[in-house]
Image (cartoon, rainbow, N blue to C red; front, side):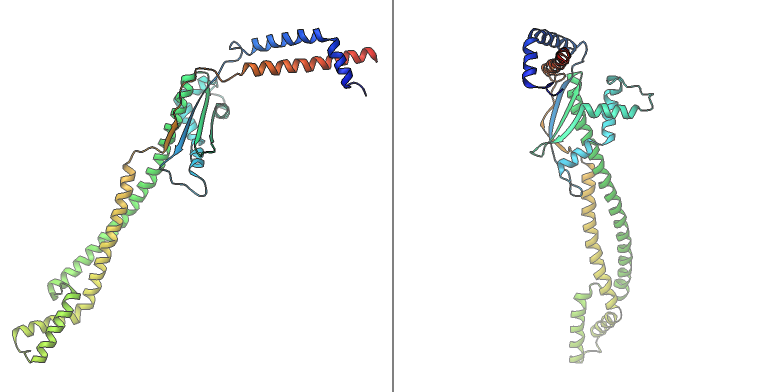
Length: 316
């Protein structure tokens, strides 16, 4: 066996059997061309689309394009596409099979692919027996992606609306309590604005004392208001400060609630389509010349081994 694979030996065998190799090559080409035809291998057509992410907030450390890939690869989107196009009938998979979903997902993943390009777009490619269906499946994947992201965002925005509504109700309840107590103080003690009144009433009271006019009716009114401020002024100041604070908080929460409500009511897309899918006018699978070339090469190599063995036995 030392000289079985000797280069000179191989060349001699090839030269001696050259007509055999020519015949084998011709037969291999004819058979591979015939068996790779549409009668035996059903042709598939490829449709593709490229999209840019838009209106998406990223989660964790992933990029917007990576988030698109995660969502497009989710099982529920795959299942929506399967149901929409009845792919069990297309792929000839029995729904009653206990391994139905495994077979469906495996076949789906063989024919549908999404990947990120170097320019941060996401390319969706679909292979199918029908060029129009391949194009429609691309469109549907983008549609289902937009729908899923929209539902995710709406769910989060509605959750925020509910939380903020609850906060607003609590703040309005607190505001009602403050307004009620402030109303009593204003009505009973005539303290309408502590910061304004305390300065002026104190000044008027001191002037009345200095001028000796405390016996007059106006001075007694000033003294009454001064005593009211002394008795309820701190409480009035506390209530007024809290009232303004609560009003400001209510204003901030209302703006935030309105923002999330506006976002919830929007129906926007989350993928900017750079390249729309179109039905292919030429099949992408099988690549017949590749099958023919591989078959020819395999046949020739096998023939060389067979003829080497025969030659070796003759000379043994």
